[in-house]
Amino acid sequence: MAKVVTDENKINEVFGRYVEAVFPSTEKAKEIFKSGRRLTFYLGIDPTGPDLHLGHTTNLFVLKKLINLGHKVILLIGDFTAQTGDPTGRDASRRTLTAKEVEENMKTYLRQVIKILPKGSFELKYNSKWLGKMTFNEIRKLARQVTVQQMVARDMFQRRIAENKPITLEEFLYPLMQGYDSVAMEVDGEVGGTDQTFNMMVGRDLVKSFLDKDKIVITTKLLEDSETGKKLMNKSEGHYVSLNDSPQEMFGRIMALTDSAVLPLFKFATELSDQKVAEIEARHKNSENPKKLKEELSFELVRMYHGEKEAQKAKNEFERVFGQHELPQEIEEIKVAPGKKNIVDLIFEAGVENSRGEIKRLIEQGAVKINEKEVKNWSEEIDIDSQEVVLKIGPRRFYRLKA
Image (tube, rainbow, N blue to C red; front, side, top):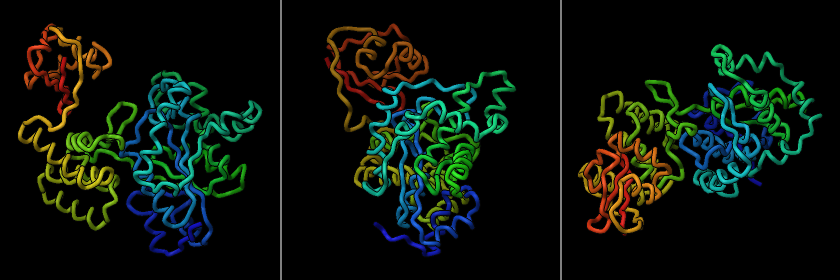
């Protein structure tokens, strides 16, 4: 078991640039850390999709610092709560996921997490182990701890009430379920984004009621556009950079982000030193070319998750495709039936899009090219036998189709 570090400078690093707020207070939390007691912290992630993205990494960086101080860390997979879906920030109820869908989503989570947290440095738990076994009597006693007024006060529920949109009782129960995780695991603290503050504070109240402990809550900065304030990573809308992305895909997706995304990502999605981040901020303030800064950001993030060699290859590939307008060196090859066929049918047969309706939409947007020539209508026909067919969808997806 690692020795608990009580060095003040090391403790201060936990509460650095990734952290937004601490409850009950930063000062009180630091006092507890200095006591030398081994604390247990956790981060909960609902597997509502198969990917972890750059927005999740801020929390993982804080957990890494806690591990380095010798504290116990639990990664909690919300396989039970994911079936309800967190109502935080939602103007409508989430689609209910089945247990099978949740199981499929979380298959790759561990592989993604160990890109930041060393394998074996944390404990993995699933909240279905206790939430799935609770009796109605236990739920009744738990529900007694929170008032309807507390729940209704949440901003997203207020919006729904004002807009006459429904709120299910199941959604009211979500903060209780997440809060009870802290009780079931008997933790000393929780780490999560600022959008999770309400849920984590419900857990803090429940820990006080059931365990008579003063749970520490550490809220982390969200990855937000510095100009619009909107989330840069949104799993629900499918707009994010995944830790599962290939080096080329990750590099290209970061380069496609707005210029105002560069500084937030350098600050909260990398482990560069504070001094290095300050230098980048100064360069940005002095009107350095945003593209150059974005290239550095893309290289750094790909380096973090795939290594320097792959980062250099991704950078060279991006320059070849987008700077020199050449084809990528490696293109996925897909076999299709021979003959002359409609472009929509050809793309659907290749299996790169799930519906003909989506393919038609992409063609209407000018996002589909055959051999670098834009496809202008759905009725266009391609003879797969008489020519090499390189299909391009959007700016970064290339496929070589062969009979």
